[in-house]
Length: 525
Image (cartoon, rainbow, N blue to C red):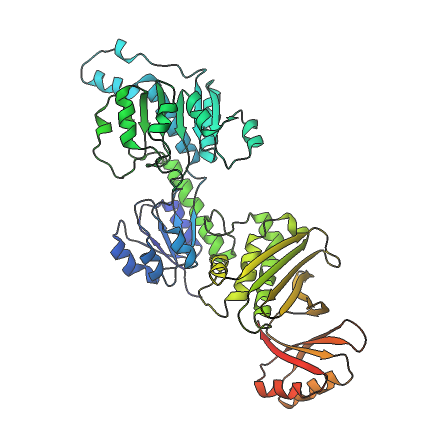
């Protein structure tokens, strides 16, 4: 088995590298490189690890013929073309937990610095000026802190701020309100938060929706003398508008760790005494760097070695409990897809998936992806679980999914029906932890979805198995196992054989010569 090759283009703590090396991965570090250099290097590598300085463009991704994972040692993904990665079947993952405490603590540090004028007081005293009266501060106890974005970092900031007696209000349209209220955070709408907060802090990604979400209109809604902290992403605040409202006095002070353009070495904001700036230090602690490197390295190992995907932004991520419960079904789902693809002529137009039983309690997005991979990969080798849903939509295939809590015959059952001018359906389950096909077009069977399968639609007449056995025996083809299904005596039936060898078209034509056999197909899994 060839070694997995990992390219690291930015600082990555040795603890993370050791995890990869100990698992047999081959590592190469380049230091900072240009996009052009990366395009030349990337075809050799299976994994790319970056921070925020490396631009992973569409061109880079398309040249990465072996690329399976792009790992961001941090949280933000502004420098990675996630859409291109998804289209090309490349997993993009980050390490969101590793820097939570560091980023939250930096935010709190900046809030204290703003409230007590610490940086400017420090500087003037060092310049020989004792200006005690000039730097009268503000107590944080009892003040209202508005947190925009209540993910891991936002919630951690709330926890610390609550400990110093601040009132916490928050805005985040994607969170569970009951969970947030349990943390002592009062949920508000966006405008309400802007109007009531004494200090506002941001903890959300930069997207089309959040770009310049704070500009003139929003500043006008804020309290006079509001203080603002941004340790999230530059571009969330319109820096030109911020400068105007600082000069007006509407905004008493601002602390910025991030900027619309980075690195940033000069700005009109830097000239104001009520502006505190740091060069994107939110995650810059030794502990955070080690945590992020170890978390990302372990995620990459799990993804490559065990197919367990965590913290992927373009791929269904399953926790260990869910993965253990679904592992056998994931493999079975892909085999059902492969089986069906070979059972239907022409392009598939519709797909209907019905999940039944205990598995409906779990996230089934990865199972769905595996089924679609099986359906599509015969005709498009680019397809994998990352891009299967996207490619299905591109092909104009309509997908419908249903969940049924109580299956009729099995503890769990997956039923997939595909259609164009006709429809074919297959149901599968695990029997003694092994995948089995238990229904084909409503006929009850028990077929092993492995190797070469011969599928015959026939009438329930004597002599069929004898005829098939004679034809196969004449060609030296051994039958490994067989299963028969019928809906009534003498009526339509199905015969499924697992074969030890391939058979050619001539054999299939000879089998079909028996009058009661309506059709014959060879399925390879």
